[in-house]
Image (cartoon, rainbow, N blue to C red):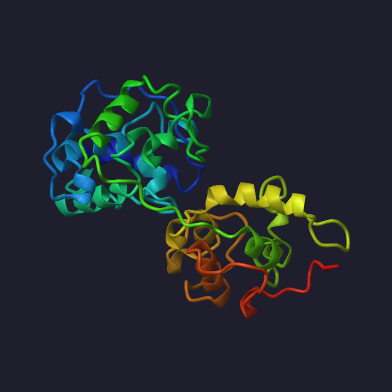
Amino acid sequence: MKKRSLQQFGLLLTSVILFNCSEQNSSGSNNVAQSGSDNMTVRDTPKGLDYDFYKESIEPIFIRHRGGFVGSDTSCVACHTVQANAPLGLVALTEENGEVFWTEEQSRQNFENVAMLVNPSDPETSRLLLAPLSPTAGGERHSGGIFWNSTDHSEYRLVANWIETGNPNATADPVVDVDFEFFRSCVQPIFVNPLENAMPCTECHSGVFAIPPPANAYWTEEQSRLAFEELIYLIDPGRPDSSRFLHKPLHPNAGGDLMHNGGRRWYSKDDPERQALASWIRGESTGSQCPSALQFDNPPRS
């Protein structure tokens, strides 16, 4: 990837500490990768993907300037590097002699992370394509916003055609099943059991995943289902460390997010509560039997 001036990115990288991250539509490059159907050579790369084309044409998309420095104008790298709380997992940019860029080693690491989000056997089901695509066009919910309103968008087509350069027998990485019953019995009570001198999660997140329970009673199953469906967007099944649910409340000194208005619930990744939640996200914890770190008396159960 070509080096970019530090001045171009200085405000961008500073702004993500102060603002939420999202993106807007962009007219991508009109370059087109060679289709995998035209090149059946299986490369010695993750899923047989074309690394050279990735570095030249795909990686620059992640730092593409989208018209401003904050809010909906923020580039991918602002959220997926600084916050480090999403599956894309880009490596932090290198700063040298007034320029910011990814080194060859860093680009290789980015390439491996990105490859986990693609499915050469069925490109349009790739998470890399579905997240920035508008739900009206078949995309998935994405806290970073919408890049493409249509699968005809030039940037979408560029990425899709690159994915097609991969081994046609390479499939998507398996998605871990995160258990609902464990959430309802063991995870949901966290939202109304704050640490000492801290606010409960329901104070800020009551409109999404931290739905308050009925007075002097436990959540109904319907309420738990609604909360679970919201929380799942903050979880990367099978990968606790790239799940926002575990990243946001973790102190930055332990690798957590730089900003969380609700304070810090954990000061180490070894915190027993966080480890119990990580086990659940890895698909290892199921059912209604809660480990000691996730046993709460509030709210009361009937």
